[in-house]
Length: 234
Image 1 (tube, rainbow, N blue to C red):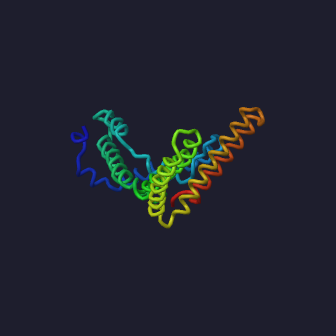
Image 2: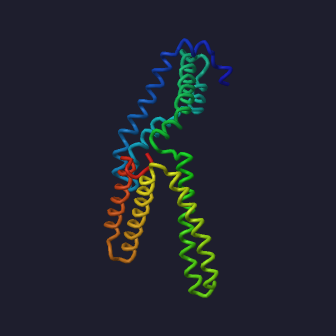
Image 3: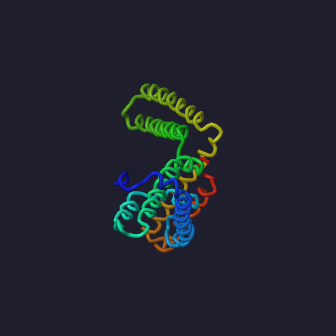
């Protein structure tokens, strides 16, 4: 249908109108998101970080629905050819310009994990699991599951694996190792805070509304730190 309806020469001759149309829909979306997001954050518990709004604005790609709607206009409608060209031009500009630049935008905002970060996360997770296994070895000997000699062999093997995993995690993190550890530590502490507040509420030691307010404060604090780049990998 697009091939039958669209004249490439009309696109070229209407570039100024297409640019104005694209900027208009993008500006409308920006006003809606930037204007309503602060209001929404006052009404919800899990607040949306400021930098997410940039992605929401730029990620509002135009698509097939706009083209389907414009094709329903009767053939004899005055200005139909111009409207079809305008909509197709705006949709094409949106898909190519916004679509192809989403990945660089996410990387610029620090919202897309790099390969190094993924490797760090895997190595760090491996180190944590090995530490848990080493702690379990002591328990196995105490319960009589393994002998003292078996414990020494297993412990030596697992400590060797742990050393390798921690070395790899350190190399993957590079100069940002402290930032990575701060991020991981802050996230874990926030989970502990939220879990403790919920336990207090369930036990009746804390009013449910007060617990919800305190939990919202923990979430807001974490979101604020993330937005400022204090506990993420920016």
